Structures are given as structure tokens and as C-alpha cells.
Image 1 (spheres, helix red, strand yellow):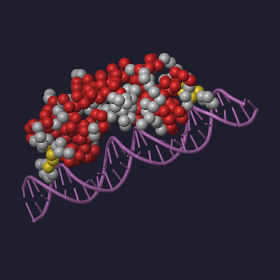
Image 2 (cartoon, chains in turn brown, blue, red, cyan; image 1 turned 90 degrees about the horizontal axis):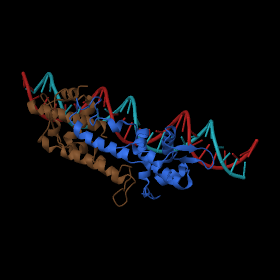
Image 3 (cartoon, rainbow over the protein chains, first blue to last red; image 1 turned 45 degrees about the vertical axis):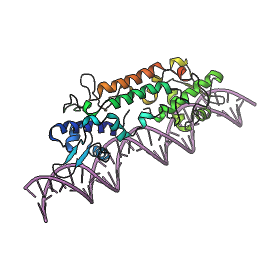
Image 4 (cartoon, helix red, strand yellow; image 1 turned 90 degrees about the vertical axis):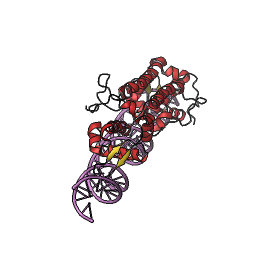
Length: 141
Length: 141
DNA sequence: AAAATAAAGGATATTAAGGTCTTTTTATAC
DNA sequence: GTATAAAAAGACCTTAATATCCTTTATTTT
């Protein structure tokens, strides 16, 4: 459904968000240890998220990553769009460029239900929701 | 959502199914012209579907591909599983191997709704449904 | 039987995703 | 101000998906 980059990104963000509750910033190594993601690849993903202002970062000693705005202002939709783009939220199930209600593909109406469910889910859930009941070992397997 | 191979495969199958209503068999070139899919790549996909008994084929002059069983016996689930595997139908949204109701990832319950909708949609729709109101120009864009 | 046709199979190319490493830049701590 | 720590940036590698081509095999038509 989502790319690896997106899976890693979401996992890393939950870890950053959770860490932010206590000591504000958290570094790459700790993030990856907790999120169980490959370090250098995750670095690239986070660099991108910094550019897109989803998170902030600080260089140098005692630096690290942090969530700049309120957790409930960052939806799953925002995150997925930032990493994978919005294609998944709009694309035709059969890959047609011009598929719509007037010129529907054979799967159009059925697939739309699934896509709508995905859209709703991503728009109705934010980082705050994701870290509800979060504990450090969530990804420990 | 689905791979290119899967998109092409579904499109090709609808074309084969529709052609089957009249003259029974249809060859690669015609399939790809109607389904708007790349010829050699589609050939590979169909070879796979033949092996999996989703369709039949016949070599030689006046040969081609055809649907062996009743159209309503081939669900979208069967097709997707044959081409992409069943991963999409069971996989954790965050890519964890051992994510379940007892040890859920932070997205578990929410993502499950989306996945269930996809499962239902694929199990409740078959090739016959897909070729309802089908016309040769569906993919002509 | 021979010729022609169409799928099957195998080999190879291309592209994009996933992943790693090294160097550079910036900020902090001392 | 110097040393150090950490992110940013850029180069590079690997793997899997996508795509194409060529040869072989099977079947039908003549």
C-alpha cells in the first residue's frame, strides 16, 4: 500500500513525537533504534520531511529532530503525501489517466469505495492519535 | 495500490472475457491493442495466469487466450492474488511482520478498516461484474 | 508433409526503489 | 576559538519491477 520510505517515515515520526513529550529532541541513531528502520535511508526520509516543514532539526551537539507544530495538526494524510505524493489518494485502480465518473473504468465505483476509506482514515488520524498508548517497544520485533 | 503487472493483467482479462462472449479466443496483439498494455510484458503476465489456470491458451493458427471457467467464478481477489500475491490483503500498514490485535502497531485498527474494505471489494466482484457494460473503447485513452 | 501462426520460454535491457557510505556544513560545549 | 557532535548533501551500490527481444515449441491450415 505505502512505500517502504513511507512506512519508515511514519514509524520514525511516531518515535520523534513520543520522544518530544519528554526531552524534546532525539537523534538519528536513537530514532532508528526505536523505529527499527535502516539508518542512512531513514536519514534521507527525515531530510525530506524537514524540507517540507513536517519536522524540525538542529545540527551539532545535543541536536536532533523534533516536531515543530502541534501533533494533532499533522495528519497521516500530510505524512503520506509528503513522502509518497498524493497519487495513492487519487489514482485509478486500473492505472488509467482519465478515469472518472463519466468515463469510468470497469472497477471505478468499487475501487472508489476503497480509496475513499483510505482518504478518510488518513485525514481523520493525526500524529497525536498514533502515539496514543505508544510505548518504546511497539516496533521491537 | 496494485502493481503495473496487476493493472495490466486485470485490463487484459476483461478484454479476454468480453471477446469470449463472441468468438471465444483472442490473440496477444488484439488483447494489447484493446487493453492498451505493452505487448511483451503482457505476454509474461498472461503466461503466469495460464499456469495458474485462471485462463487457458492455445498455440498455433487461430489460437489465442480464453477464459476457461465461468466468469463469475473468477473474483478480483483471485486475479490480484495470482499476480501480486496475497500480501496486500494481509500486510501491516507500517510493514511490521508481527502486527496483530494483541500487539498492534499504532495504525493497526484504523488501517484494518481500509484493508477490510479492499478485501470485501475484491471478494465481492468477479470478472462478470467487471465486464458489465463493457465496451471496446474503455481503455482507449 | 510443409508452411504458417501464435503462445511459451529464456535472455537481456532499463528504470525506479531501496539502501549505504563519505564528505561537508552547522551548531554546541568546553 | 577549538574540538566535537550531529544533521545535510552528494555519490554510489543493490535489488526488484518493468519492459523488450529472440528462439523454441505446439497447433492448425493448406
